[in-house]
Image (cartoon, rainbow, N blue to C red):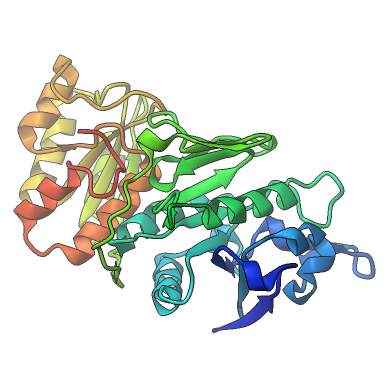
Length: 355
């Protein structure tokens, strides 16, 4: 399933922490192959040649390389579950974890892991790069080094950030609050509805009040199921009855994330509301999420959203699309009681939304 590479820092006898790096694939680990004129994954056995700064780190470092590297566009819930298993298997042996991941679906993976890793009390930092590590202007080295520094950071023997995060371009963000917003600039990830957890400049400044508290008595429980019978439905002017009926009629569909306008608004046409109402009556869970990156759903504030409230559509508050999809997958697989599922869906589980 994976191979393990142990890297000794300059001062192995004085290491302050131990970090396990999990390389899943993605742009960060690519180098240019002159012979074939293409980018290929580099051999992590030679990571010290590519990132010589590692020699100056004062913590122990181990790298796990998946046998089958994954382009993040091919990331699936089974891969999230596999990452959870790897963390569980190594949880007692390491103080923190860094996951090297492609950027396109990194926010989905971070959100999913935040739900799957119940009782997490150690840092799990995801990072990647916009340019491969083998390119001169790459952002890979800084992202990689700083993500490891943050993962290893402790205060009074406790980790500084005991939660799932994304580190990218000087900012540490809560994983289930982050979204990829840029495809060509280095500041790829943003968190519109929650403050950053740390900023890396000359020093790393931690935004302590917004970091999840360390819980000394909590134990890790890793869930191993996600239900993929879900779909996202973005609303747009001109959406018609055939489209809605086709989506709501998908065999086996259990959950729908409705991407509504503004503060949770949707059309008030009778056919539209009846279609949603009948779907809810059949047992479909509909989760209302705003198309806006900032702000939140406030069902009932406007007349156009009061109807959704009445027919049983659930408000997603300020949750991101990525967190909404993965939370729905998680709860559908792990919460058997329909009423309890609804209650947990509209309340924060691990800081993914505001009340």
